[in-house]
Length: 243
Image (cartoon, rainbow, N blue to C red):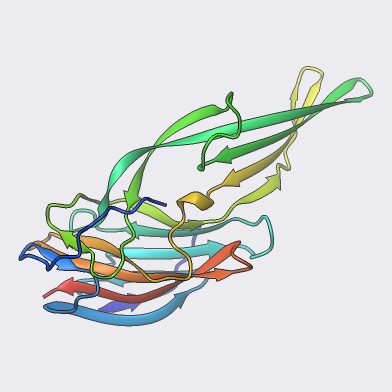
């Protein structure tokens, strides 16, 4: 299996599975019988890697851990992307996500103008106040699994991308917005932590290869806490696929 090069970059409730023995159309996470396994033990720190699962010279997946700085209030994103959705798909489903927008304003007279200092928060983790605005988005919901849980062909699979980790952060918009005699100055905050995958404990992500025949597999990963839990580094432990 090829793992290529660095690229330039621009949570979920668990799906309960019984810990029974797998059938012919199932695998158990961490059970290596009849599995081809490649061990990486590779830290993905502020870079992008590509994975060629079937060794055909074509990039099948990418994992990108991107940040400009690990200082407070700097955004960090770890995203997992399926590059060949006609061949591969993650175990998961497209679901509606509600994001809430909450704004508070503080008005200050400034000569012939009024300055409106707006503190606005986008929250993936529920309402801040009853009058928050709602934005409805469709996104891929992927399930983190523990060892011995089962993955089967009757599970839901989808391509696309999903976030393994996004940190909470705030920043003051460098642009001011003028409307009549009022100047609006925005401080934006983003709350993502409730959607992140488990920290400091290994987990599995299931996938399906369906190009020639159906083959189930997994990615074994761990998010390592950094900066007192405000950030994370990702370790790719292994990739496994049915023989």
